[in-house]
Length: 96
Image 1: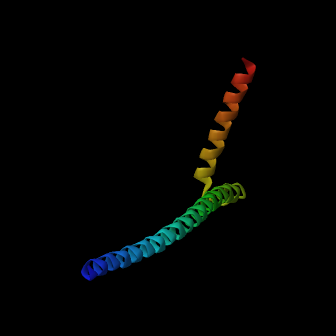
Image 2 (image 1 turned 30 degrees about the vertical axis):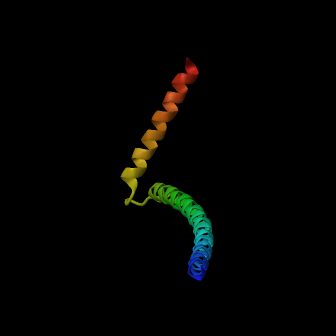
Image 3 (image 1 turned 60 degrees about the vertical axis):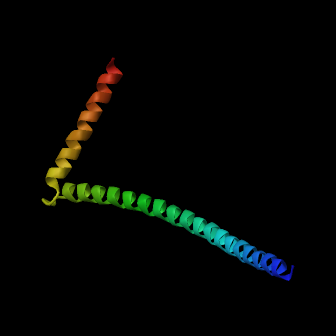
């Protein structure tokens, strides 16, 4: 009978240890999920900043070309032509 009691006690100890490990792992998972959410949010913010910076660079290139710089003249002319075509399309739609 004492052998059976020892086996039961041993099983209870193992189950208790497993439950404790389960709780620790569960807390770690929750912590990692929170960290992942924060990192995703930071990533989204940085992507938006990068897009804004790219747009500012394009605008500055165009402004620089308009001020007389030869470096980005071709790009600026293409952009201006594109804008003129868009304006022409708007005028056509308004005249209909």
